[in-house]
Amino acid sequence: AAGVIQSPRHLIKEKRETATLKCYPIPRHDTVYWYQQGPGQDPQFLISFYEKMQSDKGSIPDRFSAQQFSDYHSELNMSSLELGDSALYFCASSLRGALSYEQYFGPGTRLTVT
Amino acid sequence: RKEVEQDPGPFNVPEGATVAFNCTYSNSASQSFFWYRQDCRKEPKLLMSVYSSGNEDGRFTAQLNRASQYISLLIRDSKLSDSATYLCVVDQTGANNLFFGTGTRLTVIP
Image (cartoon, rainbow over all chains, first blue to last red; front, side):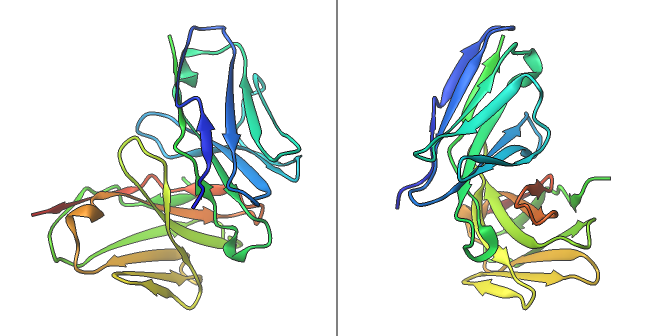
């Protein structure tokens, strides 16, 4: 079965640079979520989109923005990168209306800011 | 206080053992509950949703106690492949924003 696809899998950037992470949800899933997982920490919710509209917002810094496109893929744009942004960034998708709104995670993008 | 709390472990158990994890959540209005497993440097993988009536999937049994606001996961006949971090996950707001516990590390020993 098709899973969530994220690209790139690894990314190295310098401080103050920008980065764009991409997420392709499971086919027919209409909701996308972004999470940040720092070293030794649990995933923290950043933001979600349903049917191309922002659905909810968590601990996403103002330097970050995201959107969902007409084909349901989503991009997380990160500017003025800081050392503390180094983390695993997971995208998850779900089908609203499905039982329990189960979320399925992609393999993540490992961002290293130097 | 974290919204979702778990004993971080580690739990080191022999193959074939039964092991139980508990988790508590702070928001009594929480809507949905899940157990995920996460292997080192990999994505969280959904193990099972947790329903009010309790549910079982093979060697795994999940229970929910809304009155006490805790969730449990029981693993019977542990396998080496069960070694992972088990994450208790709660949708506290109904908006499907998941709150993760810090995870319980399980190591199954031959």
